[in-house]
Length: 75
Image (cartoon, rainbow, N blue to C red; front, side, top):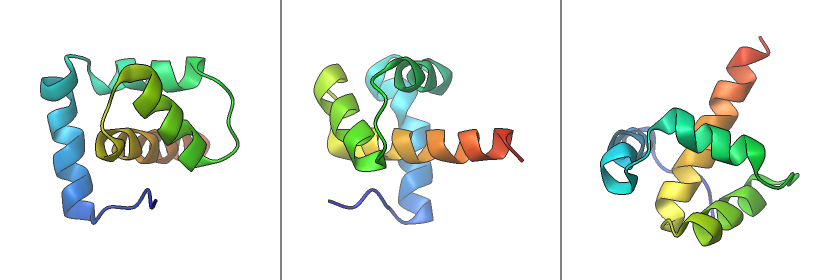
């Protein structure tokens, strides 16, 4: 399964996450950072979906957004 959505779909998913999950994006980033150390985004996505009962689409969007934020911090 691909982790990539169109930019428009990705933006919409990210915008809806707080409403759908009751948790803000920074809280999800903390959950990802405190979760198991996986080398692949797909593994993080599957863990996030299974552990936190999220749909694959929301989990994939969170992992992708977290990766973007992480890379931005290092530049």
